[in-house]
Length: 140
Image 1 (cartoon, rainbow, N blue to C red):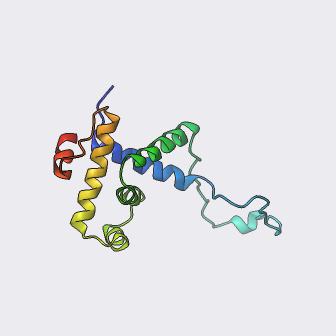
Image 2 (cartoon, rainbow, N blue to C red):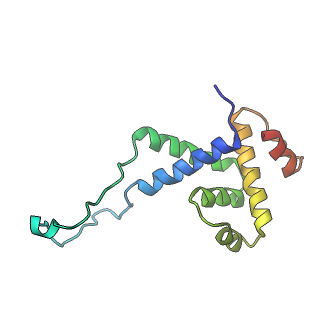
Image 3 (cartoon, rainbow, N blue to C red):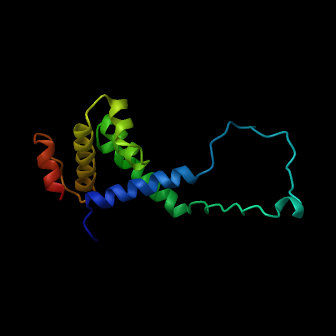
């Protein structure tokens, strides 16, 4: 088994975000549409581009995505929110505005969160009385 790196943890979180984005929307029970389904005739479809859909995620992908979501419990709430926002490819500007922190602080917390996840996945103890910089360096 290979050791987990911060890049591997970030890739898995991004895949998890993609999987959850591909799942169908959650609707209240009993939700339906009263309008009839519109069937396009051949004449309607001439000249139209075919609508390509991405395949739904496999059960294995969903399981791995749920597992990656559980990793966010290992870090503080605000760091977990930063990690999940970056996995969803949100811009740093939006993240910094939402949390009220600078870009450098957000990036440092993002790196720290990935380092904590990588250390925990490798079975190592995360030092609590050391600086973020030390933990990030230890995970590399």
